[in-house]
Length: 443
Ligand SMILES: Cc1cc2nc3c(=O)[nH]c(=O)nc-3n(C[C@H](O)[C@H](O)[C@H](O)COP(=O)(O)OP(=O)(O)OC[C@H]3O[C@@H](n4cnc5c(N)ncnc54)[C@H](O)[C@@H]3O)c2cc1C
Image (cartoon, rainbow, N blue to C red; front, side, top):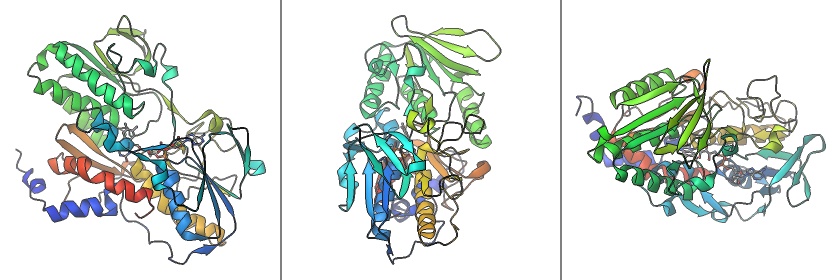
């Protein structure tokens, strides 16, 4: 154990409990709590998506507003705790630990329509749903997350995940996370072979998840006692492994130390699941094809077609083209002041974590109430994002930063540049209750 490690191990149980209960687990306390006095309004507020962002806002608005009509639109009966999926795909958690019912989290005064928005018509304050109905609103909150574009990897289909052909992907669903774990275990049990991992050429949710899957697989390979029989390779379209320099350098060095071959500027183009071959577009070069025994596919990710084709999205000429256009600090759409966005759907230099959602939810509530009351918007999202970067089964480092990669550590007793068992315990035991408190709009 290194000299510095004991500082983590000495953290008392009381400190750990504070970690779990405190707001800081998924973001620092940066804003004053909104007024306990509910604001009167008879506005109709429509929320698109009942995931992390939509559910948080439904709970916050139902407490903060008196007389509002609140409608939420989503087809999903189950609420998925997605940050738990890497633990499922690593065999640490049973999948039932990451599943609850959507209805468990929605306040009774919120009307839930089980459909999908297929068209945004902000000029007429209206959304059109898959069930053919349109819905008028006074205010619109878009919290529809992102789409996984497995279709952009030729030959790839989610039905291949865990089907015994060496294909895994933690992102596709909770069931696929479980199947990914089985597929990794089958590969390791076979005793040899090549495993390929990648980052996508687009923004992605939880940018650490593809790295976490590589590190937990390496832990399993090392524990098998036959690490030398396996070849592990990681492909990056941009030449980077992480947005923040410190973590980028850390992971690069760790990959070198653990014998992972990096192929920079390689983008996954297609797979041939029967032949177990993957083809990559290589910047400034010929396409390259690699044989694999296991491949962890991380697909490109985009906003939904409905968002991309709407006036709410950034245009093709702008940065973050196709993602929802909001002011990155106030979360209000610059062209339609009655439209707001939260979570993975919005275009920002950094975000797409539940930790960002937690920070954004406070800002959105405060600014929304100010807007409703004709006051200036004073709350500011600071870009906060966070994830416990798992660096092996049993260790992680608490990555927390804001705009321009500035570190925003929540805890004086956790060194954001060091891995520790404490942060692993936080990930494994304490973040889930904190996430659920966020859904309830309590933190
Ligand atoms: C494998 C994995 C690991 C992760 N690890 C972490 C982590 O360690 N830490 C962390 O902070 N975050 C992590 N995340 C990211 C985190 O889960 C997301 O950033 C967060 O859930 C985003 O919230 P959201 O509300 O924007 O989207 P979601 O929670 O995905 O919810 C979007 C909802 O919108 C619905 N929807 C979509 N389109 C429409 C439509 N057109 N009409 C109506 N409804 C629609 C969907 O059904 C869904 O319920 C991880 C994610 C994954 C997949």
